[in-house]
Length: 399
Ligand SMILES: Cc1ncc(COP(=O)(O)O)c(C=O)c1O
Image (cartoon, rainbow, N blue to C red; front, side, top):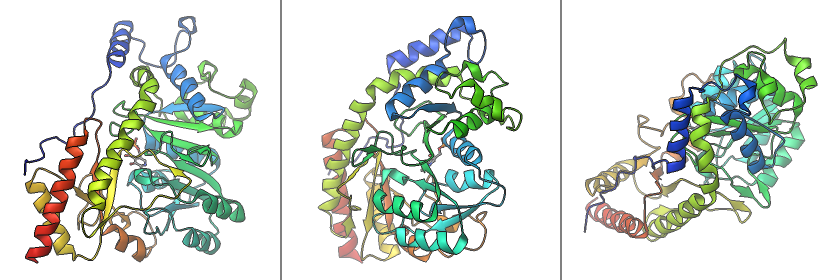
């Protein structure tokens, strides 16, 4: 069988318009988003207008990372030092990191076999801890039963903040992910739907939360230059109370993001195909299972996960080593040590309370992860499937 030779860790190139927009800015020097108003709305402001329009929310704020977006969302929504924030246990380290950054305490919630939040555990933990905030992470694009999540949110009167880093333009039924809670937070770190290396954006409808977040992002009192913002009088209410946290989006980041927006639909279409092509190979491999999608969920994954069933951890390791020997490098959330984006709750020692996450830990020990760059074509995905099947057959027959 031929070896797999594509590098799954290689980012997708930026389009020509992004390159040209960056060059124009380099010549202009206007990299900072605030400045001479005579020059018109800055790139960062235009990006915010366009992103707010995509999500259909009233206001948007560009910042320097997804982690900062979540931090600002929590602070603006009223998270106080020591506040308890519920968060699903399958997520990436920047999510509990943002909770720590906000001075709050993460209350980890178990996940289910489909890698989404366990709503019964959410209900229990909300009751037991009295937490008033939920940071819901659509990790790897997996969408929970939002009808159940919202029922628990309403029952406990929780403030919901959504981590949509892996869920741009995803839907639950007719409603876009990122519009269920008080704030939707997105990341534009290189391996996301939009790539500016670093970057984040918040979307909201509540004028007070939006104004507070904008002020905290670091406006030097130049917030009037924002265009996807609440009216000026809302800022009057808060301008002396909000610290400047300097988490601004630069015009350079916005300039390279804006030309990517019109391509988003086509990119998501290709990612969907890649998911189905590789998914077929996974489903045809014994002991491998794709997490089920609920009927109302329309995720937009940029990677694919599978669960390895009925094999020992040693066998999983041998299987992954065989795949790697064929050039197919697969990440494993079950590895003893986190290796590049694969941490799980037992690795987050800064999360207080020695919280037992037995169910989540047991599930994640069996979860593997393949990044799906847009460069993947049908034949690449078929080869991935063949490698998986052959490596599994060898693993099973030799152990
Ligand atoms: C699930 C998830 N949430 C949030 C983030 C935070 O994004 P950033 O790296 O932009 O801080 C990431 C980053 O990869 C992520 O994977």
